[in-house]
Length: 74
Image (cartoon, rainbow, N blue to C red; front, side):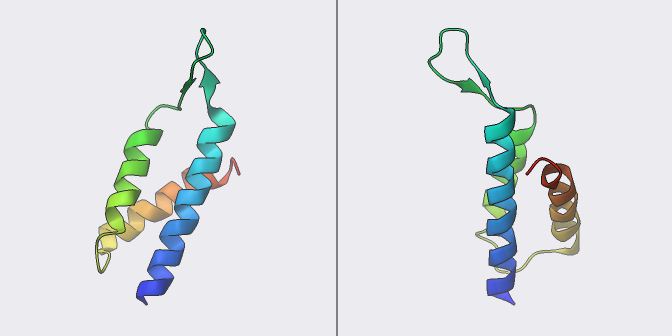
């Protein structure tokens, strides 16, 4: 079960990274990028889930919402 949860979290992280890469905008001076709104907070939350041994029902629901949010852009 743990490996299945870890695999799903890795898959979500990958989809979120692809979304950020496709939606990023360049800074005017060309020295970096601006990431989409709320993406950073969502990604930090997903990274924190990796340290948990088991996900709660609320965590799983939130992950499903993030899958739906970021899946359409990959």
